[in-house]
View (tube, protein in one colour):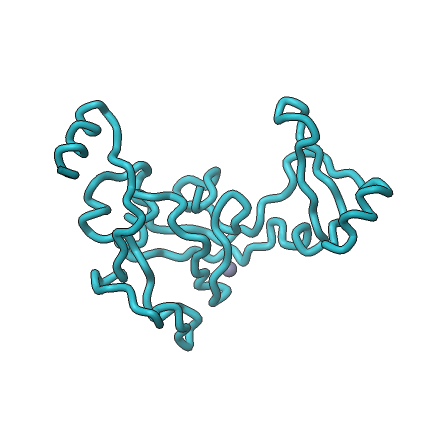
Length: 178
Ligand SMILES: [Zn+2]
């Protein structure tokens, strides 16, 4: 049944939607409770991927193997100081500045920045990490599958996504995980 539906979607020029529940470890074995335990080099004992069969259903992005640690993206728009009212409401969260988005994004649209967030902007170590094929294919099948990834330069896991710290080596304009 799934195969028939997938074929209909493919014939219409689409890619079958991902089934996020089809997970294994990178070697195809079942996901274990302790796979997140860290080894001496900072990497996990095991990494969850979409299963071979699920990855074979089709990619929505090219399979990219390597990413670079460039640090968190900076503000896109000018920052302003907080108003007295915002200070009263938000000092408890450590917010320092407010980024005002242009009005076409909607009324009162923007985001707050803490000093720690500002300090992390463009502060990647620059190292390039290359993944095994199962993880690379999982990104290609489901670009936002992961919340974080390993940097071999820093020896630890850091966030991916629109506010994440990594870009693709062969497409530096795109953040890993978006
Ligand atoms: Zn790094």
